[in-house]
Each structure stands twice: as C-alpha cells, then as structure tokens.
Amino acid sequence: MKNKWKLGFLILLGINLLIAIIISSMILAPGEDKQNKSTKPRTGEYVSFHVNSNKYDLNRLINHYLQEETGDAQIKYRVLLGEEVELYGKIPVFSEEVNLKLTFEPEALNNGDLVLKQKSMSIGSLPLPISYVLKFIGDNYKLPKGVDIMPNDKQIYVHMGQLKLKSDMKIKVDQFDLKKDQIGFTILVPVN
Image (cartoon, rainbow, N blue to C red; front, side, top):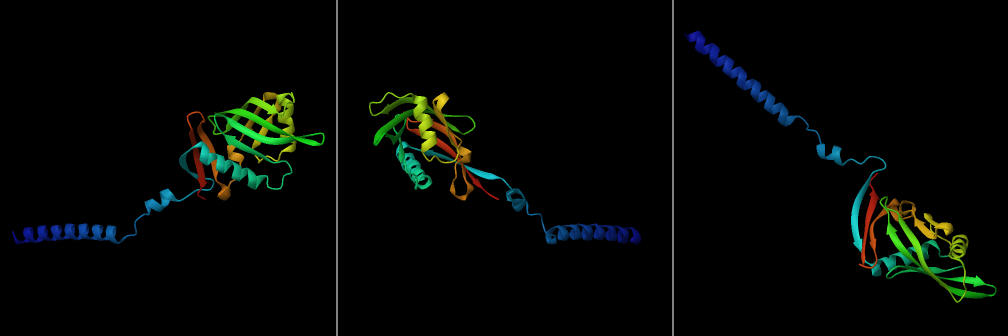
C-alpha cells in the first residue's frame, strides 16, 4: 500500500511540474507582435479619409492650387463654384483681350474622377463655337497634369488620381452636388 501512494504522489508531482514548465515557458517565451504585423504597411498602400466640404472652402483651395500650378503662365484664369462650375479667363483677339466665361455641370464618376460638361459660354459678344473655345483653352492655358480638355465632347475630364499633390496623396471625388452644397472626397494618404 505504501508503494501505491508513493507512485501516485510521484505521478501527481510529475503532472504538476509538467504544467508548471508549460505555463512558465508560455509566460517567458517572446510572443508574436500581432499588432505590428497587421499594421505594417506594404508598398503602394494608402489609408483613406473621407472629407466633406463646401463651395466656399473648395473655391479657395482650387484657386490656390491653380495659382501654384500656373504661376508663370501668361494667360491667367480662375475657377468659381456657384450653382455650377464657372471658369473665367481672357482670350486675346487681335490686339485686345476679351473676357471669357464658361459654365460647366459637374459629374462625379464611380472611379473617383470628375467630368465637367460644358453648359454655357460667353466671350464678350463674339459668337464662337464651344469646341473652338475649349480647344483654345487646352492649347493656350497652362492646365494641371490630369486635366484633359475634350473639345469635341464639350467637356473637361479631371483625372483626380493624376493631380499633383503634396506627399503623394491622391483624391477621389465621391459627391459633387453644387446646388445642395454637398461635396465629398476620399483622400488617400500613402503609408509606405
């Protein structure tokens, strides 16, 4: 009987020691840093932020951006967001400069780009075809990279991903409703 109790005690002691060794090895072993693995950026990845804006703030931003991009251009122009997108500039006609105003209806595309469909035009009192004026703008105005003038389609296509922004950020248009003053963007910030 003495040997049974001794054998049982040694088995129980062995099990307790085995459990103690397993627990202490789990406590003392370096664990995986799951947080660092999951947040470690891979090349070409972006973090997205959704931003809502209004016409007033966007007017200031657009014209500041245009001034930086076209600072040394001989022909100046500006953009104003009202009920529609308005482009103001001047066209040289003979020895005079004639005021130019084009209005566009904006449309946000599913891919994040923006299309400006030409709605109306006034150039002094000259009756010029819209496609001619858009071609003139495309040929003579210094436009940012990513802005394509399409005279035959009477529209301007803005490739938002090609616009040159600081820190290699990219912008996608989510919503562009000027009548309701609801303008939404996704800003993509690189994390590589």
